[in-house]
Every structure is written in C-alpha cells, then in structure tokens.
Length: 152
Image (cartoon, rainbow, N blue to C red):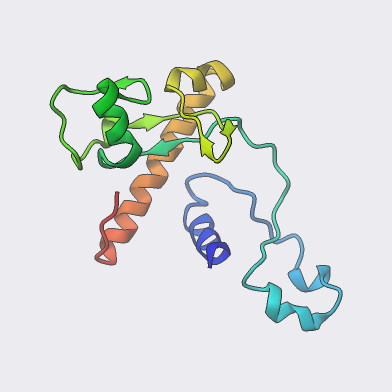
C-alpha cells in the first residue's frame, strides 16, 4: 500500500519537482522468473539512485502535534516565532515551514530550526526546497478538497 501511495503522489507532483521514478527498465526484466511479477508488481518501484539532501522539509497547515507542543513550550515552532496566544489547530501555513536536518537519534528525529538547513545546504537551495515543499502541500490540499477530504 505504501509503495502504491508513493507512486501515486510521485506521478501527481512530477510537474512540481522531478523525482527518482524511472521507466528505463521494466520490473519483469529484473526478476528471476515472470511468475514473481504478481508478487512484486504492487510492492516495488524501479528508481534512479540519487544523492539525498541532508535535510527534509515539513509543511504544517495547522498548529497541531509536535508543532503545538513546541509552541506551548517555547512560543515558537522549529525556531520560527509565532504570535502570542496562537490556538491549537489554528491554520498556520505561512508561519510553519521547517527544514530539519535528518539526524536519527534512537527512534526519533531531532528537529532543528530552519536556519540550520540554510547552514547545511546554503540559503538559495534551502529556499528552493522550502518553496517546493509548500507547492506540494498546496497541491495535495487542493487535490484532497476536490475529493471532499480536508487534512492538515
């Protein structure tokens, strides 16, 4: 199911940002036997090997979850100051972009302020990542609304 969901969104958002999907090879050409195709066809993707960025972009549409906890404790979310008195579940897209470096600490991801993302990959590339993340988020929100689904 996760493979199919990923493939769906990669295909839908390829006009926003290129991805690692490729049609250079067919899955059947990589299998030991054509009999394996049924098993692997919905569980596998053929992709290009890329070098990932050392950060990830997270777009929040609403002040909930760990963002809400961060705000309650510090008055900011990932180092971005928020208006005093902000409410849980408040729509907050314009104030909630973060670029946390991918740093695995046990079973959790450590979140850093956006400035750290600038330090790691440069401000120009970090801003490109930020804008692409917002564009993908907005695409997903609009796609979901057309289907009668609202998400944050």
